Length: 143
Image (cartoon, rainbow, N blue to C red; front, side, top):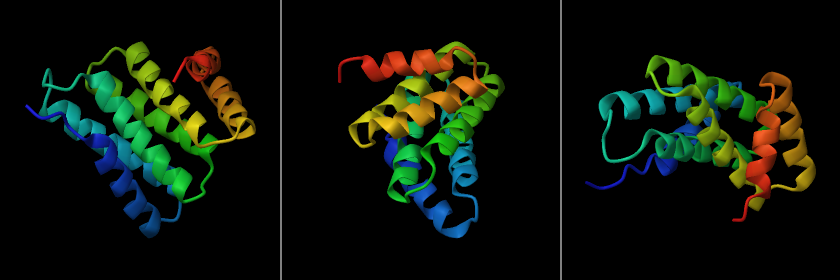
């Protein structure tokens, strides 16, 4: 079975939503929520592990926000909220789900200057105690 290419699909869907809606970060989170729900409910236990689906969806959404020059810190929080909600709805381990999302957010290090990454870390820590340090750990991990 071919692996689901949800990252590219999510990126394109978020980019389109950004063109249509007023709040790009909320639009990105809504698309992530829809994409994850569809992917995780339609193929539970399928060929692609849930953590990989989450990583791909988050990467796609954040890439679209980056390309649209939107607030990555605000977008990160909105996307993490969506992942948290979907994890609960789909009965996924919330720690593993959030770790997958944080790992995907850390991929921004390839495209974003350290000051913006620190803004993201501060926002994450302000909303999810201890998650900022997890995010920092992913930033320090070898590429």
